[in-house]
Amino acid sequence: MQYKYTVLTNTTIGAFMSQLDGNIVLIALPTITRSLNASAFEALWVLMGYILMTAVLLLAFGRLADMYGKVRLYNLGFAVFTIGSGLCSLSITGGMLVFFRLVQGVGAALIWANNAAILTDAFPPNERGRAIGVNLVAGISGSVIGLILGGILTVALGWQSIFWINLPIGAFATFWAYKKLRELGTVHHERIDLPGNVLFAGGLTAFLVGLTLGALSGYTLVDVASIGAGLFMVGGFVYVELHSRTPLMDLTLFRIRAFSAGILSNFLASIARSGVSLVLTIYFQGVLIYDAFKAGLALIPFAVAFVSLGPLSGYLSDKYGPRFFTTTGLSISTAGLIGLALVPANVSYTVLALLMVLVGAGGGMFVAPNISSIMSSAPVTRRGVASGMSATLVTTGALLSLSISFAVLATSIPINVLQAIFAGLSLPSGAPSRDLFIGPMHTIFWIMAIVSLVAIVPSALRGRGVGAVVDQRLEVREQVA
Image (tube, rainbow, N blue to C red; front, top):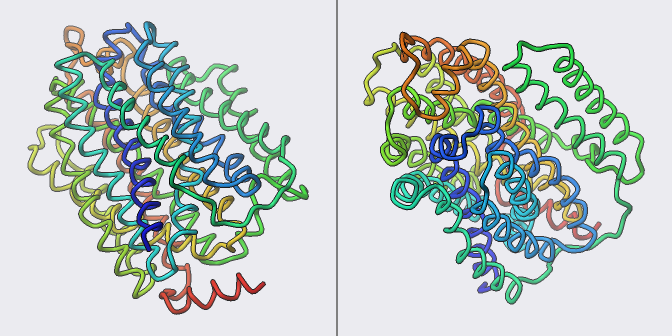
């Protein structure tokens, strides 16, 4: 009884740190761009580099966790994340900050590849949704605090201070995890799928670099070749995984209906949700010229709404099954995104806040039951891989969302104006700020709304809701097998 709450508390700190860091960096991005004289491309990759490194390593770390222990790799992740945070604060150029964010991403991948799996091992089936809901709420609470704290620190102490906040928390959590957490899952020693790792990491990187660079250059032959090579490598990754004895991504898990439906809807929901904060941050700081603190306050309705629905939907899904809550949540988010795609150029903040509440509330209602459904549907011995697969597709969806948003902006707005918007500077003479930005913003939100609408389909088709009793029977069957 006491140990499971120790696990919940420690993994909650991990979720809190990563979400805090994400929004602190987001809200400070215009200041970072100005201070380091970074390009719009470097500014984007300060965000994307961290997420990319997390995405390409999650599957490998999920496999290593099943081989060598989830807790061991989780502990290492805390240490690497903390060291990476310190290095980020020492950056003197945009390129250096991008590199150190990659180091930080390695630590985040180690944490997220094992977070849900450690929770799943520690809690019985009828309590998992609630535990994951609390974990997610703490994470999103970190994002709320990040919006406010990031604005305060950036304005008062400079952008470097946004990384200092991770150092004492990370040091404490690393020591506590090392002393208190223990391995509960089954360990299986298998070979590492090196070809799969190389193809997935190389393919995703080449595709995203080509997509974002091409948006600035007009998609030259080199950019198109990079995109094509990336897609070819991802296709090769799928082929290798289907024919490997020890695949990086265990595609046999997709035979489980609840797992495949949960994974697909999670991926699409991540594409639909992840670009919202970036677009609105650029709008508030680059178009309305808010400072970092005021912009952080303006984004709070989205995060608070997410927090409010997370634990409740997780608790209710333990009793009644996930399908109703995940499908309803996606429907609410879709309505909010459609509203954002229709707002006029002179929209009031009250209307924006109400629409952010809809998008955030729908996301909060969806996430906890969906993750609980994914993890409960996976066999005990494959939960490390299942956790890694789930987190990988979520982060890949976030990367695609950011890339699509940037591509729409960069192909619709002159580069000198885009650079000024990213840096939160006054626009060049004669540039109509709101009118110039509102068209691309509408396009981005329409794309997200359509993707969110598509995500409803797999969510609704995941099968009848599985309650706690059914989950317990599955658990007993898996352990006997």
